[in-house]
View 1 (tube, rainbow, N blue to C red):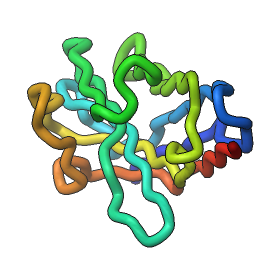
View 2: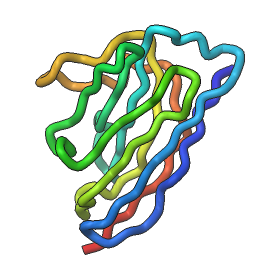
View 3: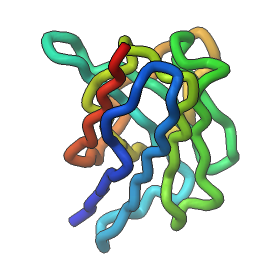
View 4: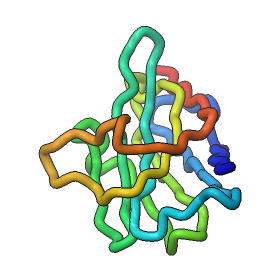
Length: 129
C-alpha cells in the first residue's frame, strides 16, 4: 500500500505565496528511478500537470507556472515540495501529488495523468483577487 499525503494548501491573496508538501510512505512504494509531480484540477476542468521532478533532478513545468513555481525534492525518500510564488486567481484548484515510474517529459510536451500510478487526496489552493 502506497500513500501520498499533501499539505500546505490554503487561501491567499493574489501575489502571495504558498508551499505545498507531499510525503510518500508505504511498503509498495518502489519507484527508485521514477518521478513525482504535481497536478491541479479546478471545478469543471480536467486535471492538468503543473510540475514534476525525476530521480535525476530533471524538472518539468507547465507554461502557465514557469518562473513562478518551483518543484523540489532532495532525494526519493524526502518530501516533494512545490513553492508557489506570485499566485494568481487562475491558480486556484485542488492540487494533487503523484508518483510514477518514468522520467519527466521533454519541454513542450504535456505531463500525463496516465503516467502516474499513485495519487494523494489533494490539497486546496484558493487565490483571491
